[in-house]
Length: 175
Image (cartoon, rainbow, N blue to C red):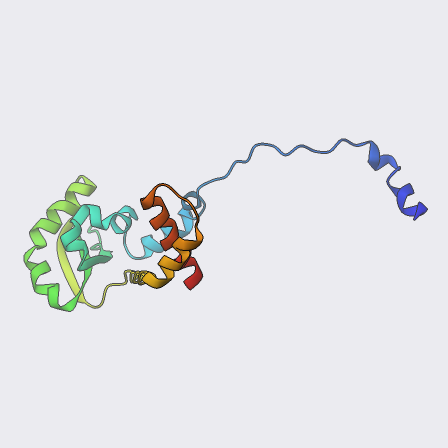
């Protein structure tokens, strides 16, 4: 035991503890920017905002049934101006015809987003969308359990607060 205490009396014991500096946390999007930029570039997207902000660009009605898959740029011909790209959209089967009729609106909105005529035409691929499925809301707690929890709460003057706490308690007990 004495030897263990002697090791703390050595030259290291005279050093002051290091205080931590300010935390310089960076957003995850900045750290993964290069990784995502490379993946989107392989699909022909110069900017990933077309994919990440698709619902804002195309509108919620169109975005609910279609999503950008890739952009196909024609090979440049020397001495000729660059031709606009073809935007390939993944469209849910039953809505493909409706989205096709809205092609001029989609082209207008996408080109307005880019600020120039980047997209000249659309191509459609019928397939299920890759959006995440929403989880179903859990069923409300059993009214008998809510009443039992409400009895155990004691004196709470505010009835709305008491009801809310009883529902919360019943939901917690259920899980």
